[in-house]
Every structure is written in C-alpha cells, then in structure tokens.
Length: 558
Image (cartoon, rainbow, N blue to C red; front, side, top):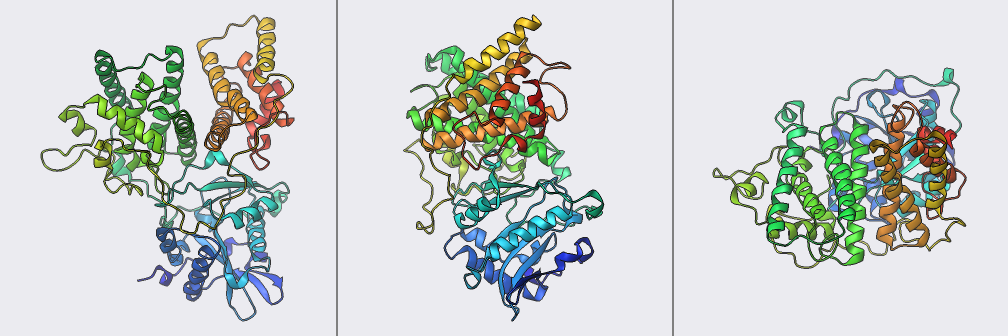
C-alpha cells in the first residue's frame, strides 16, 4: 500500500493564520496539499528532481512516500487556478520538531511551473513560517547536483555550512551540502506563535537510518571498553610491525601530532557520536571526525604515499587502522543519519588501512573479534547490531581482506550535463596578508604572557595546537592555494573546529579555566581578524563570525 494513503494528523491550529493560503497572483497560491493530492504531488517531485537534475534510484523511490512524511511535515504546494500542482516544499509540524533551528526539505518546482518565481515564493513561505515561530535560523540539506536550487539559496542570503556536511545519502556517495539562513528581522516576542511540543509519533524520514532502541543500546560495549579494544589492537599491531622492522622512520614529533589528532577527533569523536544522547553532540562529533578524515584523505591523495608519511606505516597509521576497523564493522551500525559513512567512501584511506591489515597478520581470534571472520556458529561479531547498507561494497568484510588494487572510483553521475553547485571546486590562490598570520598571533600571545608572567600549561598547550593546526595553518594553506580536495577539507575542518569551540564556550567563559590566558588572547585575536575580513582563502558564501555567537562575544578579549 502506498504511503500516500496515510492520513496526516490535523495540526492546522499550529499554523499562523496567514499561512493557510498565500496569494501569489495570476490565480496561483501556496496552500497545504490534501491527502488525495499526494500522488500528483509525488509526480511533481519526481519530475522536478529528474529534469535538469538527477537523483539516485533510492532517493527517487523515497520521493513517493509523501503520506509517510506528512505525519511529521506540512506539505505545501504551489497550485494554479485549476488546482494543478506546480511545486511544493515540506516544513516541520512544529509540535513534533525538537531542533533549535527551522528547516524545509524537498523544495521542488516541476517542469510546468518553472520560470514563474515559484521556487523563491516557496522558500520565502518557509522563511516567514520560521519567523512566525520565533526561530533565528534555518538549516537545510541538499545534494550537490541540485545547483539550480543552490543558486536561488545564494541569492536569498543563505550561506554554505561546509562543516556540517557529514551525511552520505546514496549509492553515488553524495555528501549532502548544508546551507544556513540567518533571520535578522525577528518578530516581537508577543507576536511569536508558541506551539506545545510533543514526542514525534514516528520517524517519518524515509532516507534516515534509525537510531537503535534503548534496549539494543543497553547491550553495547561501554565507551571505555570500546576505547580499550581499539587501543589494545593498535598496540599489538604496532609491536608486531616494530619487531618486523616495518614501521616507518618518520619524524616522531610529526607522527605524535597526527596520532593525537586521530585519537581526539576520530577516536573520541566517533565514540561520542555513538554514545551521546544529544543530537547536537552527535552532529558536532561527526563534523570533526569526518573533517579530520577528509584532511587525511586529501593528504594521501596529494602526496601519492601508501601511508601518511611514505611507503611504510607509522604508529599514526596503525591507530587510524584500528579505529576505522572498529567503526566500519561495528560502530557504524549505531549511527543515525542519511546512510552512515563507510570507510570505503574515503578511497585513499580505505587503501591505507587495508595495507596495515595485510601487514598486521591478525590471528583467527583477532579476526573474529574484529568482525572479519565468522565464528564457529556462522555468525559475525556485531556488537552494535547489523551493519547498515554500504552503498559501494556488496560485502564489506570480504573487501577488507582483499589485496589493494588501485584507487576505488565512485560511480559516474546519472546525468553528467548537470554541473555541481557553484563554489564547490578550487579557489584561485589569494594574496597572503601583509604580515605573517602566525607571527602576528604569536606576538599578541607573547605580550600577554610577559604581562601576566604566565606559563603555558598542558591544557592551554593542547588548545594552542588545535588553534594552530586547524585554524591558523588552515588559513595559511588556503591563502597560498591548494588543490580542490585539500581546500574543501581545510575549510571543513576550519569551521568544524570553530563549531566545537563555540559549543565549548557556550558552557564556560574561557578555554581552560575561570580567567583568560595567552591561548584565549591568541584565539580572540584570530577571530577578530576574521570579523574584520582580514583572513583570506574563504569563499564568499562561507559562514561568518556571527554564525558562532559565543565566539563572536569572545572577541572582546582581543
């Protein structure tokens, strides 16, 4: 039975009076779709997403589930005087919406409605709803080839949130692009429509991998046990490679820096994403974990190395292997999302970790523990539940054990004539600032320490490294110019780290204690320079300082 036959709940009382019907002139209007119109609306959706655009077969099938989606979303249609549906958009039924931002989805205008300004009208309708409910921002997600819609978003003032692009949604490995709109003209508080919130009756998103139930989560290993398992495996493999003379002789200080980044952002980040109850904590952890993987992928692709530092593995490669093995064949099943990422989606890292596995020569019991080898009863060790679909590998376990043979290629787009969204490729090299960025920040921090007589303790030194590696060095590399993959990764990590810092400073006034230190002054000065438009290498539609409210206030320290 089609989900179009489902009857949506009556939440019309949750809508502002003006929203029920919006006159667009020329006999056209925006209104809610009736359930009997859902099949026709689905035809418009499919027509819109396959004319001058393309979507995967799985995504297209999901477009014909409006009845299910309408349980949690209002279905708004732009219709003409003859009640022909020309376009549509979905917005949340507010009583079931639990996020701090508003959103809309599947914005579409069918071929018969194009050129009439309906896309802009449907977006404006969504913005006006957000304003009526008192939201200060809208966040939306979109596939990269939907460039016509993206150009509309840019014209209306949306910015790209590259740090939040953590979702893989189809067999074409599409990472959803994320855009934010800031509402700068809020309604007075007494005009905001308040709606009592209720638990959502169902999860009606046909694309989203559902989070395991509380009973299922109770059977998982504890976070400490998961951390020990990955660390112990890495230590065993490192000892074997060391005794066999197979570890690289790379500069140990650099290896240690990479090891710390991998442990913090990928190891701790993925565990946080698995075990955290807050959706915001899950999202934030995944932003950093995936951004770090993006940058490592770009490094290996750029250098052509087999491993992070050359033709042989280091302790950093071994740790990365152990963490990603646990993730791919275990923790991935625990993650909610739009097709949780698999290691094979980073093709150069996929080859790297499989090379480490081949050198490690794991024993049968270790292969069973890792989920690579069946137990005596024919089952596999799946501590977090059955693995979700891996869009690029039919049998991930077998693929882990296959010899490395070239870099895996992604599928070609269904319609190669459709260009990706603007500003998705490389940027032209930009002129460097008149003064070296790191030197300027060093002088600010040094002056502060001299005045305060303050040593740089371990906690402050850790923040100093994060700021230097992810923010200062990232801007320097962007300013100097880099290949497209590296630029995307640098920008993603830059804003992911800022999101992490903004969340941290939302709960405490300074980075390491009750009072400001040299590292606080260093960060505040960098942020102030960004707010003064003195950093180069970012795109015109990237986030601005105002998108990080706690960091914006923090610039007072500068």
